[in-house]
Amino acid sequence: MSTIIYVDMDYFFAACEELKHPELKGKQFVVGTSAFEDRMLKGVVQTCNYETRKLGIHSAMPLIEAFRIKPDLAYLPEDYEYYESTSKKIVDLLKSYGFRIEVDSIDEVAMEALDTSYDRALELSKEIKARINDRIGLPCTIGVSFGKTFAKMACDDAKPNGIKVLTEADVKDFLREKPVEELPGIGKKTGDRLRAMGFDTIGRLSKASAVALYGEFGEAGRYMFLIANGTETEKIVENEEAQSIGRERAVRLNPADRIEVESILGKLSGEVSAEAKKQNLLYKTVTLKVRYNDFTIHIKSMTLNHYINSVELLNETVLGLSRYIDATKEVNKIGVKVSTLVSMKGQNTLF
Image (tube, rainbow, N blue to C red):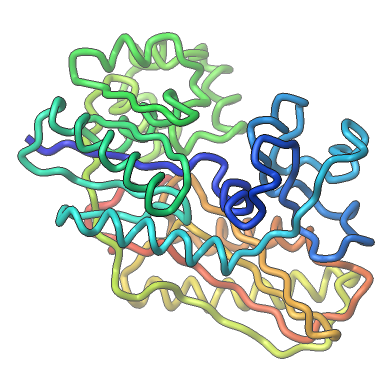
């Protein structure tokens, strides 16, 4: 029996900051996208701990709104290099089990435990949680199931700091009343389209015609049908040796000139996409790197819900990230990078 163990680090960036700043443990704080205290109200909340979420503050909220809710909220600028180095320690720990693993993002890793029963996978999950907490000092949530998609959904259901096992016998009951937006890879627009077709829950979607879904959504419709019926069994695809594909340009760029910004980013996205296709790779994580004329650097990343190889979606994601560029400073270098790479073979894509 092949069982998937899906490990998702809880409030990862904020938890990493608690390691550096133990005095913040249990207190309300946010990690933001700005590195400058005097400019932080122009940025957004990157993440926050659970104590802060109880106030209604959440990721992607403008910082100015967060400080309206709690004026004395503690603020920390994101430290992406530190988060990456911590992520590597977690991945190395999971690799020590000898199973195949797939790094889904900086804070999510799936492991394929071959010839492992659910009982044994549960014991392994408890051990993994304890080791990550003891050796690295971070909390995590783990989902266990017969396919990666359902292991991830079980993991989401068990947050925070829990473990959930989802078996073949339980999966339909588990899915029945969940809203269609909880299908991995389904965004608001697709959710709205499904609801317009009369499918507001995954249970109702399971009664849809597979042919009709394929006709409406293409390959994504087939994927939805399999998940809704509890028969999707996506397995692990080990990450390629190449860690990322990126392109950078030295520029003299005024961020307020959106036409020029979009032109340069479009070219960089096209080059990165072409190289990924040349190497027969898909990717999930998109990163925009900006260096200003005072040589400060800003890095913003987004991990998508599914692997892609679409230049259109890549460019759309990059343009979304470009909203966080500081428009008051000139840019002298800009770059686009994709990571979390896997081979195209054997992967489902939504785009």
